[in-house]
Length: 447
Image (tube, rainbow, N blue to C red; front, side, top):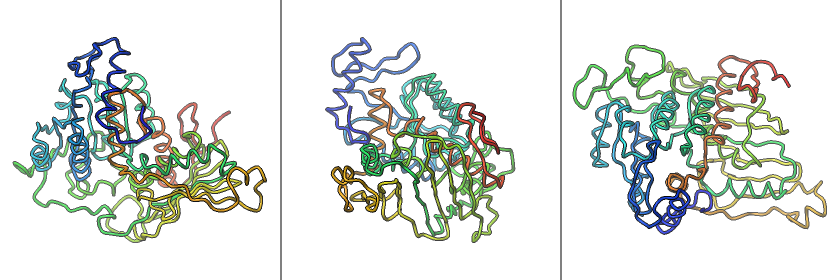
């Protein structure tokens, strides 16, 4: 098994696939022919490419698809055999990019027996049911962040992964960057002592950063040819309403389809922090604030948002964001004896050359000094391409059946805190999470 998130080469894949093949009692020779098990899953031989389908090929889906295609072509690991979108123009463009089949209805893609895994890059409100249907169809899933839209969906996805044994990776690619895993080791070694508080931010200030993506004025549900949009299919489980191009092209501005800043941006902060901590954790208390201070354009979601979450193991999380100001705060974890600074520049999706250990010099013991020193220490990190590493990790796990870097349980811990923050903001009150009963309410859970 490779280190978490490490780019895998062809030889390593062949060794892994051969080991899995032997363990399953199948033909052990390299290049074994692909076949189906009694649950419909294709067993991928050492020389077989992983066949992928993409559901949702807007801006993000197109970008992610290109990365998968590039990683796949570099080592002959995977290929995209089908794409799906409700907007005919996007569908046609991606069919041409990948020279593959295309569907307006994702259910048709899921009937394909030759597809091993799907990439889901639709608006947030479609993630859960599409991922669950894909797993029921015997496919592994790479689903873009956020993992889903509600806490109830979070639980259903966890249960479905356990039930089906499918591999599910959530596409917050920053979690495959090395700084979080180096920080985890330092914390586990005792470098900060008792953990007290984690902090992070995600700030930006640009027109696209406000989710005001370009609207195609020629597109719509009543148009023909490349301009056609299947609006009813796009709405899916969301409330029915007449076609609104702002909602279609700028869906992150509306509660029906997104959690705004919390789900689009804070997932990239909460997920890596859960990797840094000794173990992923659910919050027990969450409160949120903010407001729509600048962008008075009819959007539902606030342009400035912050949350505080408390955890039963005795530490807190503080996150801040504004889409009207681009200045970050450092991303770090405070302990009683020291602080780990993972991203001094504060950009959780940005690259960094090192993490910093800063001891609390006034209180540390001689034993601490002997182990970690009393001066600030910089710990180098691998500057690999996190996106490519995240994709490669997923492809590796499709072959080996191992748990990916951002597996469903770790992602669920991030999903719960950000979904609770959205609910707290909308209801204007502090909320508590009962982990045993998977209930959110205004009172602490019963012991």
